[in-house]
Amino acid sequence: MTPALYLLDPDPAPGWAPFAGVRPLSELRVGAHLVRERWEAFLGTEVAEIFALPHLAGFAEAGVPTVSPRHPVTGPALIGSSTFAPRGLAPALAEEGGPFRLTCGGMTVGWGVGPGATWDGPQPHATAHEVAGVVLHGVHDVIRALEPLLREDLVGLLGESDAIPAGSTVLGDPAWIALHDAAVEPGVVFDVRHGPVVLESGVEVRSGARLEGPLWAGANAHLLGGAIRASAIGPRSNVRGEVSNCVFLGYANKAHDGFVGHSVIGRWVNLGAGTITSNLKNTYGTVRLDVAGTAVDTGMQFLGTLIGDHAKTAIGTLLGTGTVIGAGANVFDAVRPPKYVPPFAWGGSADGAARVSRDGFLKVAERVLPRRDVALDHALRAALGRIYDWATR
Image (tube, rainbow, N blue to C red; front, side, top):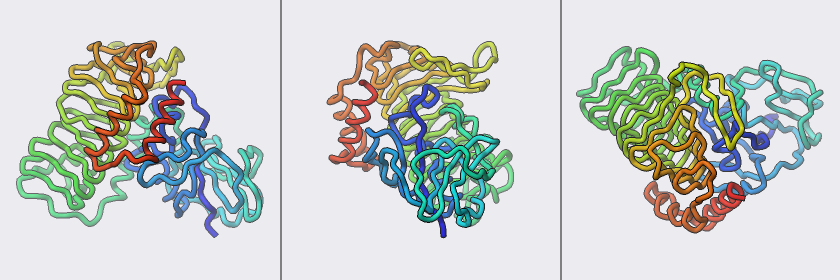
């Protein structure tokens, strides 16, 4: 019997900015897949419920399971950590009689109970099973995980493919290109010498784009031109210009030129024309984040900007190495904003004294979401309102 699968978010911490409390962390994209999708492939079943902060209950996003505060569950059940990206398949957990836990490198990444037993919290002394995967210690690790996971993910997605369109240039083995009902204009370069390129259904690629693997673009993404490499571009995103080692969660808009590198771009983000990220310090040292006065040492040499859902930047915005922009922030007035912009900041001030109003935020969302065929219905409006109230409390 396959256990029921639940996912558990951690308590909020600076390293999880700008997404903690804004979306379940299981909905972060790690490689080509969401954390949730990785757990589902690992166990061979869909997630029944996500345990997150109380205000995220009723989180309204297509395809996301029920989100609710943590509560006891009856076995057989597996409760996976939202901060772990499994690899491969689960061991034979159905045979477990007592409580068990999953570990990766000695760190606990999941808990479970057998039939008829009840799980009501972590059980550190339960029988341990070591599993393969990537442990995430903060949002910055989404970028660190690109190298070990993205190429592996894309090799697994290769197979049947539409024919490579006439007028395309291929550098490397054409078998490393997978087109699934994608529209590619003449003049596109596919460079697959370092990894596959996979374009899902409805993807459009404009002439002048150079796609360098490993690269994945989700359904109905638009790749509008420029060098786009080593990235995972979520569905319904528009991307133009030089993009390197980035993760777009989806439904984001970067429709103009400007370098964005080693960055995580949340849903419904809009990057104004000429927005540029720095992803390397002049000293070539490791990048340290500053989240509301708390330092987070990432240990990474290359790291750009972490941008929360619904944030927006003005034209010509220059983002320093390791900048964090909170959800819903509207960044303007300063060519180079501070390294930490609080959620729902208005103008990008470091202290967050000026904020987008609640009504103003919802009115903008009401205009933006239908542009990607998403209606701001009552449930979604209420969910966004709760996120605003929590983030500005």
